[in-house]
Image (tube, rainbow, N blue to C red; front, top):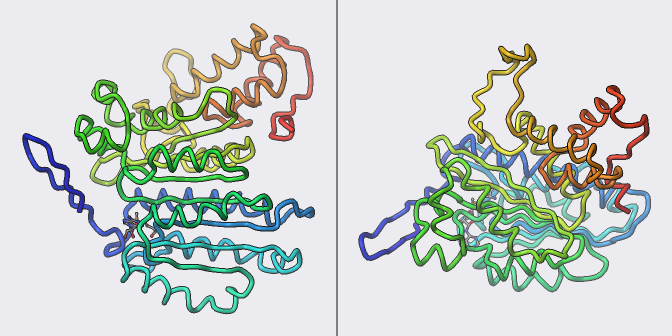
Length: 369
Ligand SMILES: C[S@@+](CC[C@H](N)C(=O)[O-])C[C@H]1O[C@@H](n2cnc3c(N)ncnc32)[C@H](O)[C@@H]1O
């Protein structure tokens, strides 16, 4: 239970224990994004012929007990399941794979240990540590491991509220090499209690901006706050995914990576979950489009505003030569939350309409090497 005090009132936000009930739709969407991203992340480090980094660390700092009340897998079991196809490769290549789980509640940590027992045989292929610490203590303890030169890290920070990904923690993570992270944040708490001193202490977003941001867009504002913490000359990529729970509250994931391949893979995951806008498990731009609905004026299938705007902007920037080559187009696409497939549609049409010369554009991370 989080208690928020102010002069006028005391508001108690009862944080219900998500593991005592079946996971709701928002939690299922969050876990499916996490699992899908993990599926894309693991082979980059475990399946390649060459071994560049022989230590692979996966940190799950808010691990929970392993499953919900009906046995649906939580993050620790998802990680173990997704590692299964790589057990032979890990042995062959003599990789050191380390899983780290932390859970503050002792009973949940015990439950998790018991659930991992059946995996005893596999655990010989990788190491596993399960701790029972407050997040900050656990993070500070693990941090030196993340900075070692021969390792790649994936961090999952599935906090319940808003307070753990402080400026200090965020800056430490974003300054690490070969480290991707995904964190959860209860953005609607910021909307509801924007002016509360406790909120301002954790997240320095201007209350007026919060006031002017509609509820369904609040997670985008939270992303912009975290973006503002990254210095302008640093190559770093962040992307949001907004989640609406059954009761209407808006939460979200924020993904971060210092590498274009990381953000490309995350965005591909998001567009699979949300083929309309790649950004939410609901109609975040209030387009109110029924699948296949025709536009009365153009006779074409109606497009979400976000896609329409992106296509127009990309076309204009190519024609004005602001974007001069495939690398420019690729980076513009990713930094606007789109994937190469969207850009290819625009460039193919420009070529077909003879607006640009016929050419082969390489819209992939390889162009950024
Ligand atoms: C949203 S749940 C995580 C769910 C988990 N990832 C899963 O898939 O089941 C947040 C978890 O963090 C734990 N927790 C709460 N405060 C914590 C703290 N200060 N440090 C570490 N864990 C904490 C809670 O007990 C809860 O199990």
